[in-house]
Image (cartoon, rainbow, N blue to C red; front, side, top):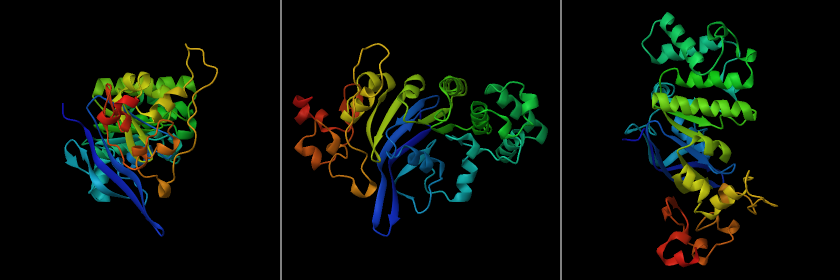
Length: 326
C-alpha cells in the first residue's frame, strides 16, 4: 500500500546573523493509510518543527533547505502559501496542544466547522451544517445539535479538543498531524481522546502523525515510533519493539525513565546532560556527549539508520564492525 506521507531527507534551516542553524537534518519516514506513527523525543528534538514543515506553517526565516515532502506521491514542500492553503484542511488536518489557539472565540463552533466544510467541499450551507453536527456526534460531543451553536469558552478542555478534532476531520483529510493533542488534558480525558483518534484512524483510513513526549500515549496509540534527537531520526520501529527492546542508547534512557507498574524500581534511569543547542551540535553522533557507551567513532562520524534487531537505529553499536560491544 502506497504511503500517504513520505519525508525524504527533509532538512530545515534558520538563517541568523551568526550563521545558518540546521534544525532538521535529513529526516526520513513515511506513514501509510490507517497508520498512527508516533514521533517522540525531548523538547527541542525537532518533533513539532517536522509537523510545521509538513503543514506548511514554518515560522520565517525558517525554510525547507533540502529533501522533500510527498503527500500521496505529490511534492508539497515547494508550494506557495495559496497552494498550501488549498491542501491544509482539505488533505491535511491539524490538531494542536491548546484547542483555544485553534478556535476563534468570536464564532460558534458550528460556524467554524461549516466554514471549513464549505471552503473545501462542494456542499450547500444546509448540507454543511448537517455534516458539522455529524462530526461533533462522531467525536463524542453530547447533544451536538444544540451545542453546535455554542462558543468555544462554553466547552470544557476535553470537549474543546474534540471540537478541534472534528474541525480537523471536516474536509475528510488523508493525513492528520496531531501535535501534543492530550498534553493539556487530565488523564481520563487523555484516554478518551486517544481512543477517539484510534477509532477514526481505523474507520476512515486516515493516516495520523502523533507528536508527543509522552511514551504512555505512544504505547496506547501508535503502530510505529520515530525517535528524534537534535533534529535527527535516531530510531524507527514498531511500537512494541521500540518500547520493549529499544536499540539506541537514547531510546533506552527514554524507556528507562518510565515508571513500571510491575517491576520494583528504587530509582528511574536518568539521562545526564541536556539536548544540544542548534549552534552547538557535536560532530559525529549528536548524542555522544551524553552516552555512556560512546566510542571514538561516535565522536567523529555520524551514524545513519541501520538494522538493529527488529528496528532501525542510528548507532555505531549496531554496525558490523562494532557489534561485539553490544
